[in-house]
Image (cartoon, rainbow, N blue to C red; front, top):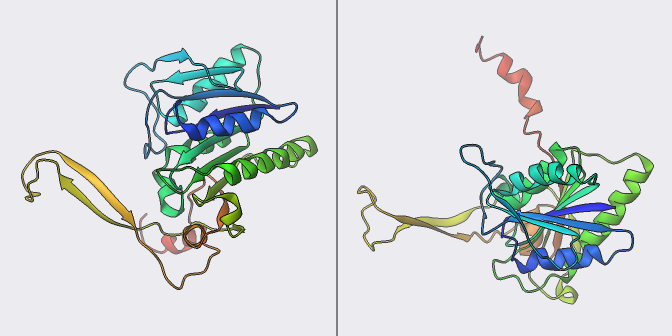
Length: 263
């Protein structure tokens, strides 16, 4: 089984290292890495088109071959597929992560981690995104356990010919020791809202004048919502597994917009 690992935190991220070590320890698994050379969080599903993208070799424990690039996570998957094909290596799965910070709800639209996994599905490769819900992540054990179980399940589906290449598993765990996590919920995407602001870096308060600003956001804490929503499950101490795909179509509205007189 040939697995590509990417991320958006950069090739030196501990989360990537933990994931590579776990997957490479599974018998019959060959792990390859292609990841950004630095931080690319919240880069979304962008790709590099207006400038060259550099690629060089890196050393990652457990990886047979590792590349670092100046590009974004989707770039990493695209170019790794091609570079490995030149070595006569066909990829069976893509794993993106383990991200330092949750990729829940509407944040999946901004997430470079999720974009890396979705790019795998676009390339007809089964894919999984894995995240720990803290930018100061310390506890990766359950995230690695779930990644390993997902890999083995996908391997069985590939063998049986039943794998769905368009569905990505989006796994998120609280940043807690494994024994303190309450369980795993199978969930849907929810809203991920923030108390947010763009703070002027010069200390001024006038947003009408040009200057430099930095975004800050603190996640909103929700009350009274069901924990079949990924955001709520993680907030309440559960890990979540959410199936997602690239199809953003609102099918229920197709017939309705026909009546709007747009044509």
